[in-house]
Amino acid sequence: MASEETPVPRDFIRDIIDEDLKTKRYDGRVHTRFPPEPNGYLHIGHAKSICLNFGIAEEYGGLCNLRFDDTNPTKESEDYVNSIIDSVRWLGFDWGDRLYFASDYFDRMFDWAVDLVRKGKAYVDDLTAEQIGEYRGTLTLPGRNSPFRDRSVEENLDLFERMRKGEFPDGSKTLRAKIDMAHPNMNMRDPVMYRILHTSHHRQGDRWCVYPMYDWAHGLEDSIEAITHSICTLEFENHRPLYDWFIDQLGIYHPQQIEFARLNLTYTVMSKRMLLELVKAGLVNGWDDPRLPTIAGMRRRGYSPASMRGFCKRIGVAKFNSTVSFDLLEHYVREDLNMTSPRLMAVFRPLKVVLENYPEGKTEEVEAVNNPEAPSAGTRKVPFSRVLYIEQDDFMESPPKKFFRLAPGREVRLRYAYLIKCTGVVRDGGGRIVELRCTYDPATRGGDAPDGRKVKATLHWVSAAHALEAEARMYDKLFTVENPMGEAGRDFREFLNPASLEVVAGCRTEPSAGRLGVMDRIQFERMGYFCVDRDSKLGRPVFNRTATLKDTWAKIQARDGADS
RNA sequence: UGCCCCGUCGUCUAAUAGGCAGGACGUCUGACUCUGGAUCAGAUAGUCGCGGUUCGAGUCCGUGCGGGGCAACCA
Image 1 (cartoon, chains in turn blue, red):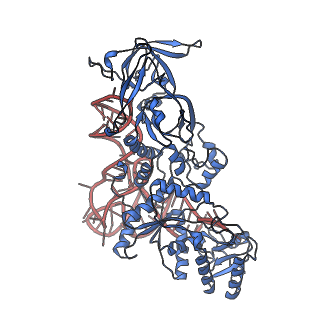
Image 2: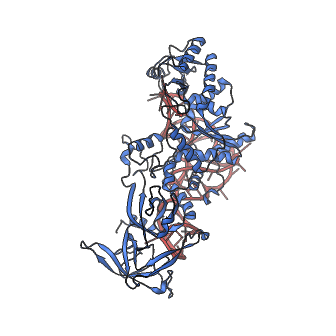
Image 3: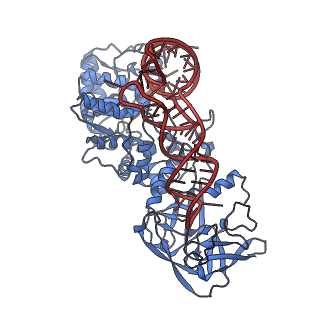
């Protein structure tokens, strides 16, 4: 885990915590929390927040809670709760026995609301949602007081209690904080605290028909759990004054909210809403589609938890709205996978090679290194015989100057095996090359020529008779543009990359691939990092491409105008 | 024509309490190599503008410009 041995990052949040520790603001405690709403799957943006919150707790010897902000039963479900628990655990974090649900605090929240009503700081409003909007004013114009704003405490108490008992239909009444309808911060214009929702809750059943709003609930949740630093994203900055107001009116424990910029990544979308749209429309294959930036999707794609943690740690934390390059993510993934992935050989688009001077029916085994970065991974035997497959892209009949691979009359090395030279091509009726005739040099077993002659390329290969058939799913960027949301008036779906998934059937792998288990991560030499998908069948594995290897040749081709 | 927040290489991010603007990714060179992988060496490129304070400003003050957020009974 080289990526995690980097020094602990410094950022403005840790500076604030250092300062609070110095001034003994919270008696030297550091207690954070990760508070997702169970209304979708977690994505890499959440991973940033998870790493931040759990990471800070770890570094300071504090604690981090996992708390579900389940205040809106119309959008939430237990399935989402489970997927979130699964994702956080997979990322490698532990919340001990501190798994909490906002819904478990509903009684206390209700009592506190009654408290506010008693203090004349909250009232029951009969305005409709639409009217509330009208009375709120605009960004530049002050709002007006609701005609129900000055009801007596007794009447408010009675009405609120009857709301709770279910006497009123959905939307007919709300409980509102009594603050200031002319406040320059819109959030302070008598925000709604409770709405009536005759909807059963995935944990509370039908116990409630009034549910707290985020602004009212969230600060209370943090207060109840004695959180010291409530870390959240920038869009809640304007809500902090309200969060503070509630806590001060109630006179309860007061955490410090700190906002940071959410993660944006190029070539993808990072909002649960957009992700949900893609899933619902069937534009991807579920929440764990390997093309999605969901944690479940990236996991299925083959990203390791360590690489995701390394990425999150090293992108830093700031208040500047930024977009991280997808290249950076891939860099950390490759960095980790390079060190940890066993190497195997597989040919994705097979081209048959017949070694004319190799005895028919003979098979030998060559020794291959499992991981050049980790000698302790040992070696393995790979069968070699007269008929082989190599990659179609590794042969060109009339190669350009910079093409180093096999061509008529040219000699290359077969990895760990022999030097071979191409002596001819065999075509089908349509003139397509279907087979290469080659000779091998028996003196080069293992790959080195006794006379010291060099070759410019080493190719991966498999023995036709011993190969295992497999399917590969080649994933590419989900969108064709860096910011799919960036074009005014265009829907982000217009920029979906039609080539984001290419299924390659008929791949041939060396036999040892048959011993892999689901989710095992490997590198197919020269082709990229892959992992075994759960769709694999016995004897016919399915591989997801996690990332390609850096490919200098592909870069040259792209730059020099692809003459292939 | 309101309020809040933010502007450092192409990108992300450092610069302990004002003191040589550094790192990473990307890109480009080169070395090495039985993965055109990995590794190594080098190059590239930045403090949004204008004033002010100061011996000294990315950092402090003012102002302009630019970007983001806010008008759900969502979070």
